Length: 429
Image (tube, rainbow, N blue to C red; front, side):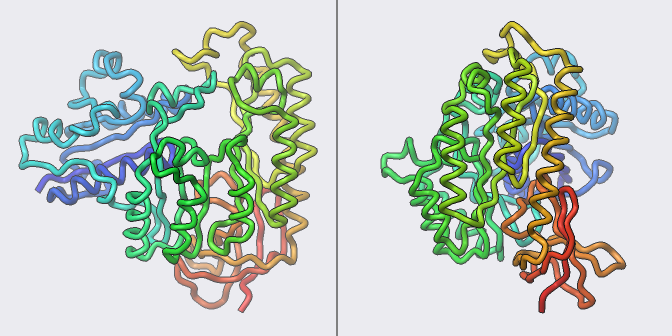
């Protein structure tokens, strides 16, 4: 029996690919192991989105090839730079781009000289998430073609998964005792726009809601695709969490236009106000890029003021990464890295103040959610409620309980203290 270990880098969407690869090999009688030392073959599923992730992937490859194992490298980095990688790191036994995934089984058979391997199948996944939660990927690719983003180059144009397939996979996950379903895509709110059935994201959520999950959460919502229908549905749902993850990227109209983003600061403001008026308990998260080419002091000031005015519950910001073969790569007025650092630090300092003020208002609130972690030899646990997503970007909710609680249990916690990003409470019996 061939022993295989897999290292998955990058986002949750890449993790789903990794789970499919493990599921394929497990179904084909491979033994999946947890360490490189125990492996006969190591598969490294890489990220190639921005410079930092590319460097992390390359370093991981260099580390893995030091072992006397067969090494297979897959994923976004290979899709972008396969030929260059083959020349620069010849020690890797097999490079597999995303376009080659339909024949991954054949490529592995040829490399390992083994019995036939099943093809990749989205219905055959070996989940790597905690036993109570799973990701559900509903589409592939992206049509937005933002000026800074390489995703369309890597993953191709937007393709919704067939409606019935998505629902069927969700039902399979529910049968595996999954309580928390996190719906993901490169562009979640676009779902169904290319389907002949005329289904959309709300139609899908209606079906998913019927299955019986404790919690469903949406990630990656493009602002101008958030419809009144979606807002109304979430406001009334007892299962789909009132959590709006909306990567706005900037607030200056000049910068948004240069980014090829649809919408303006004024339209963003209307959307935020609408969500908060229709969904009073809504949690809003956004993501920004600072230091985009041509971003001047006034543009950055606009971004800071917009952030201060809107009090996002969670906000992440990243320095612009100059990615080859994207329109912004050739833009004039590239921003020096030290200025990007200064702007990022200033923006995050403002968000610290906002987050702390927001969190203090939650003292006394009772939050229900899933127990996700326990500190060894203590009575401290972590809770995931509607307030925080499972991708380690949001803050944590810690609470104490003198009675033992199992991971995956659903409990209520009263918030008793607030920190800059985190909350603390005690269990409510």
